Image (cartoon, rainbow, N blue to C red; front, side):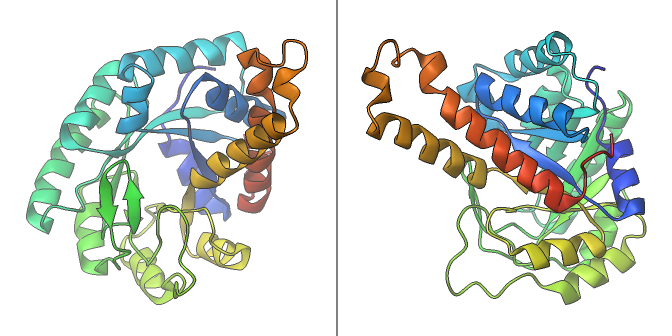
Length: 288
């Protein structure tokens, strides 16, 4: 199976009360780890790539071609969407041209009028090619490749205005934050989430900043319309811990332990474990 739009998998998740994991990829090992874990657990999956990660991996087309080839070579049979994460207006267009099957246009830093105008254009372009679109209202807290938000809470009326443009799924700020949550974090605003879910109809909702949110909050959010949950930092932590352990134990100094294929293996396995844990939590296992 090649790349697919994220629309069908998220519509199904929304109707059946579970969520699909969006796991950011940063290199070949990351991509392979997520794809193999999805296949092993028969879970649909969304591979998220920020504009910074696209640049790091040599460009949109390199990433798209790598993912497509890997799906074919690894005989991946579960639905896989390649999704631009927090895309700019120009970035979304580049991803569409390069062969991504899904894009996020993050217009949350514009006023609502300009957000609507630009989102509408991206929706029309993407949908003409069968590509799904995520939009955002209310900036997500923290920092994601230079996009900074303070954990805003979205205006449900503005969410409806964006949803009515025909976006396939919507990220609404409900106090969530990218990266590590501070000790004084107040938690997700479920009152606003409930209002957004009610006013936007059957539009699947997206929870960014999935790392560090307590499991009970995650499950409650899923029960209230969240159908896509983004995870990035937690996989990075897992990778870093396992890699540090390998080196601190001196394994890179034994035989050919310095070979990058061996050096990166523990971190790659750690990513797989984290992704599996999230798929179980989100309820996407055996939903392919």
